[in-house]
Length: 143
Image (cartoon, rainbow, N blue to C red; front, side, top):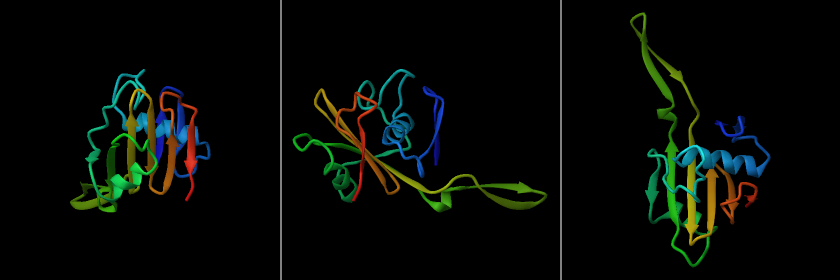
């Protein structure tokens, strides 16, 4: 999946990008909603409405293990299935299916106490920012 970062006018391919800062910031700008100058998990905590908040279970525990231990985390999840990646339309009396995107999954987790820790997983790639007011503190999580 490619995300255009309008503030920097970059196109970030989340499947291949090697720079953790670009990967984390692309996901941050994609997932959080706010004014153009807002920073997700710092000046805005509103997540795009396509995400579902998770309060327990496997995905919650996945994110929780990377965040501040003494604060209950906030976790959101989005999953686009293969079946939802097609556009159907009629052409010359026939139904045509066109694939318009690839299936993917995004997990967002954060803890906040005046300082923030922000975690993202896109498919199997993970990053963490333990000082989320900064856009240059992203580190890959390799397991």
